Image (spheres, one colour):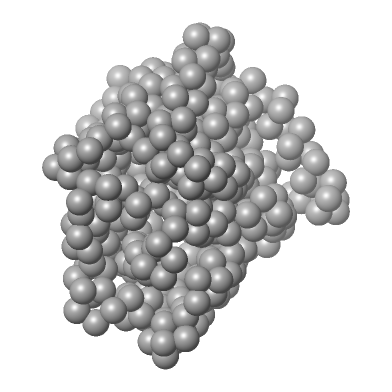
Length: 410
């Protein structure tokens, strides 16, 4: 039975600092994300470039993320995140200087997105696994939900601020503010020391470790099916975000209203994440909520793809945000609660591959479909695919997926 004491995890000093630093940095990240998409559509007037932007951000994950998972088990995770966040700061700074100097070109925006994607291939697995070191296995579900809430509150605030900054002084200053925001997360990481860090035994070469991690995922009775569904939803469902600039024009949104469209999904995701974080839930509760949330997410994507009015688009995107965050948080929590600590980094790298890397193919496919048949038709195709995958999972997997308790050293 869920208990209403989930926010107690914020009483832990190190996690609280990590959460606050991450939240401030994410506001800048979302400012940059909204501004670069808007800048790209202004420079090219082509949804195909938006697909290329999303693909460039995800493609490096396909190449490097499994290596990043091995690195997160072989080296200190806190130090890895410090390095990746500093490199992300440099990426934002280069993007801002090129834009402010008036030399920015579409290929440079896409290329720098690929640079950031390469950094994220090492950052995300380490950061996902690092949460357990801060809060322990009993509170990992609440910490995941709060991390998602920080992400999505920033998703509301960042684009709103970004829209105002773009209207006032241009996209370049959004990128510059993002570079400055990384100082907060670098400070928080430098000042914390994990309390629940396990002594990880790691032998063998990197290639062998990657194969062992993949074999573990395939043989695990619950993690494999969960990751397959994540791959489908992330490849053709989640990329709707990259096509918001094109959809914004179709529903008659201006610069500032475009920021509100991005924020609407963030508002919903924030509400869903904060609600989930409030309860201390067990595996059974997450398992019951997962199929409901993924089914509703798919239906709401279909509704958004067929929406023509701006106000209705705001409402539908809010519900998309709620259902989407519930689904991904449930999946992440179930995986974290089921994996053995010796495989945590590698399993979370596969999760990152399926969650973010698979979006590379989806962005390219949806970008091609959008250029051929229009953005709404492309999003309808993605939503129907998600709905079919969710139906198969609900019908064939839910009753048979087991979530054994791993042996976790604390």
